Length: 123
Image 1 (cartoon, one colour):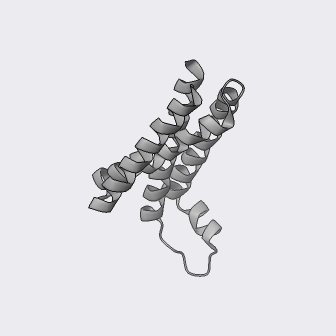
Image 2: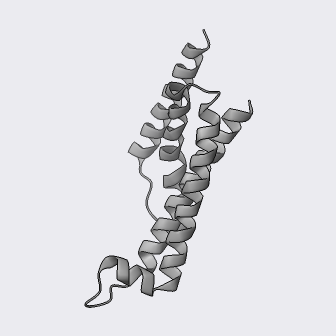
Image 3: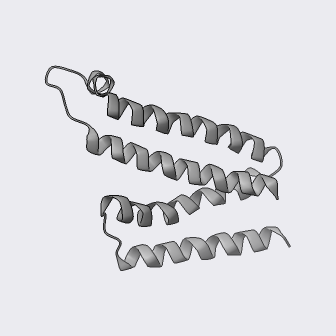
């Protein structure tokens, strides 16, 4: 049970990292004559958000590796699809990005696919 909790936490952390990347992208201001990397480093807010997101990705990876010691990758990887379900509503809440009917249909299919696959792996 613990490995599955870690996998779900790993997915939640990845989603959080994506939100931080989006926030960094919105805060980014191009500096004439500087490369993208130089502009990001020069902007403390953007650099801090990117560094925080990358740190979260690293922590998520450690948890993911731990979980894979006990859960087959073919099962664990299904949970990554949850990010496709979690991220759009959060983007709607934090960034005002729209959610349309096709998203709801697609998210429903993803959830059903995960359920069917997990039930099939238990038999």
